[in-house]
Length: 452
Ligand SMILES: [Zn+2]
Image (tube, rainbow, N blue to C red; front, side, top):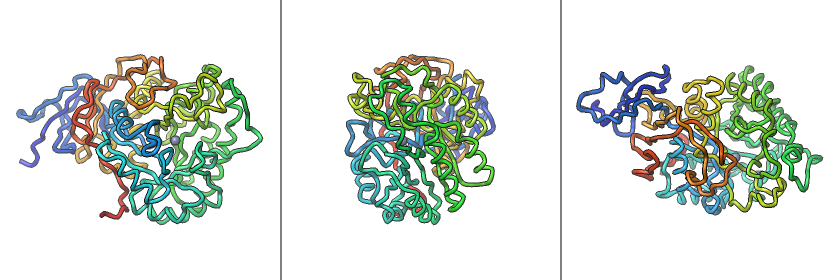
């Protein structure tokens, strides 16, 4: 009787590694038991019929800033993971800043893990931070379970998370060479000639962070990757000019990867209103031609996947009334909206559900080493599923937003794709606008973590 499913979830459009097809996803406990033709569903098996809604593997968003503990008024585990669940995300990975303390020591990591207690609505992994002072903390952080390390080559936005030098990067890479964990890098090399004040127009802000900052940082990272042969990941790529170098490095077999974000794939600088600091992020959103090339980079595989880089703050820190880009906090909140934003762009370009699932689920799961259990609808995988209607549209309004501070540049955008239901390891956690059964999320630690 061990192979009797608890339940079948059926749909005319299930996104499997073999293609999109009508299927019944059989669930046993927390796992997918099998994926079979609907007509073969055992007669006594309870069925959740999702009809013509698309069933995809739950999204895996490996770049999220949750800010708890310490800046929980910006965002916390409860609000962030509920927002994630309502957007079809079933696994996320939290960045080592802007919480207090920043996650650069084992003690800070323990405090963070404690702060998640009974608040996780989806599964959650964590990165350690790499700063100039904490090279000795890296190994203990690996043993504590972080999924990688994050470093900045430019000012991070907060003084307690200083940027690293090339020497620091070298030391860190020689340590990481002993483990199979990536170094994630904010790749902008500052050139101080560009600092500006009183930046009201978007164009003036854009001019302070030129593509050359990213291009130069990425050239250096490729050199280091060649030397140390250790995985380096470029977070939130915005400069399309760096794509050729990354492609070339990947062709040479270097372990270098890149992500980009919905805001770079959806917005264009030509249409950003002067003074609208909701659009401030770093690196900045660039022009339409750049956006097109990022899409080409994604389709060709140079850019491996998409992350939200959900980076919230208190509304007043956006300095909207002053409209000055130099004063505003840089970061865009979008956690719950990634799927409809990207899908809306996919419709325009005739891209498929399979590509979407690779960019938002399968590839990011691989990146953090959880692709044995997350990121695809196949027998033996966690029953993490998002059921959504790609034909239905909505207009983004603050009242529908589930993350803590509702300020987002997506307000007023018409998007296609409404999440109807989300399952986490076989349990319904979000059902037609309601949060149910949670919080059932768990912390995900790396496979080197020492068990207590
Ligand atoms: Zn970030």
